[in-house]
Image 1 (cartoon, rainbow, N blue to C red):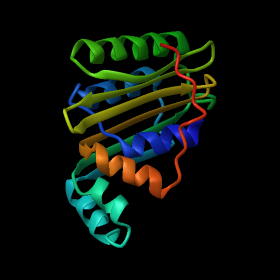
Image 2: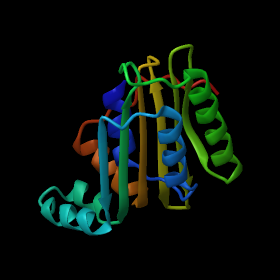
Image 3: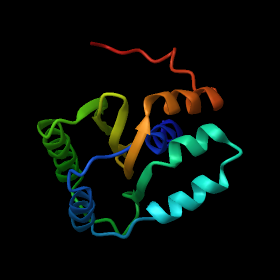
Length: 173
C-alpha cells in the first residue's frame, strides 16, 4: 500500500491549503523529527525534468511541477509521545477543510489502524495540486505535497509507461 500511495502521490499535485501550516502543525503534534524529509523546489524539479528528457512521459509530467515535499514519521519510535487519536482527528479535520475549499477527495481509507486521504485540486484539463496524508498501521505517518500542474494526458502516458493497472481497484459509490 505504501508503494502505491507514494507512486500515486508523486504523479499528482497539491493545492495551497496552507500545506506548510499543516506540516508544521503535525510536526508540533507529533513531537519527533521526520525519518524522511524531501523538499524539491521548482529549480531542482526543472533540472530533474531536463535530466529525464529521454523518458518523455516522465519529463512531460515533471516540467510543470513547482514543488514536492515529503515527510515520513515513525510513530512506533520510542521518542514519539503523541496521541494517535488526536493525529487522526487532525487528519480528518484537514481533509474536511480541503473539501470545503473545493478540493476533490480522490481516495479515503478510514479503518481502525489506517487513515488515508488523497485530495486534489482539479482544473478542466489538468490537476492543479495534490495532497496525500496517510497514517498506516498506527505506526507511520506520510505527508506528501506536490505542487504545480499535471495535464491529464501526460499522467495517462506516464501510467502507461510504468504499466500502472487500476483495473483491480473496487470503487464503492
